[in-house]
Amino acid sequence: MPSVKTAISIPEPLFHRADAVAHSLQISRSQLIARAVDEFIKRYESRILLESLNRAYEDSPSSEEKEQMQSMRQKQWNLMKGEW
Image (cartoon, rainbow, N blue to C red; front, side):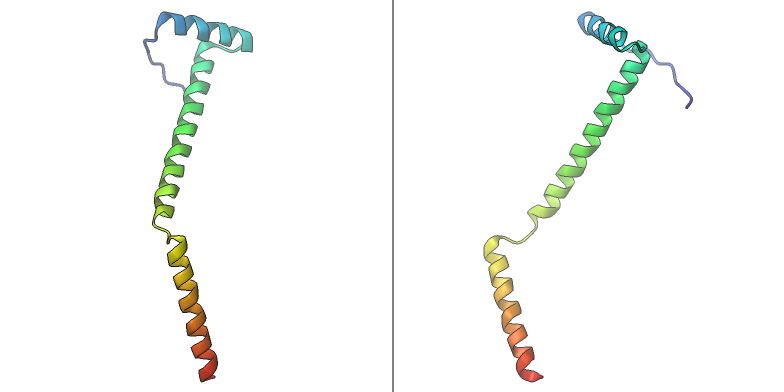
């Protein structure tokens, strides 16, 4: 996969921590940062998806509404059985 060079500015203490982790993992700082950004984006996208699902389910009926719908279905079923 082609790479793109970029310059970023980070606080010096964070740079030193990242450098130490990269050294410990025996990877370059660039690889460490690429992995970190990739993981961040995956978590972000997962959170957005979860929030979207939660919003969709907020529109679902309450337990009282579910009971009413079940009662209506039962009444409709009973009516249909009587017509057959």
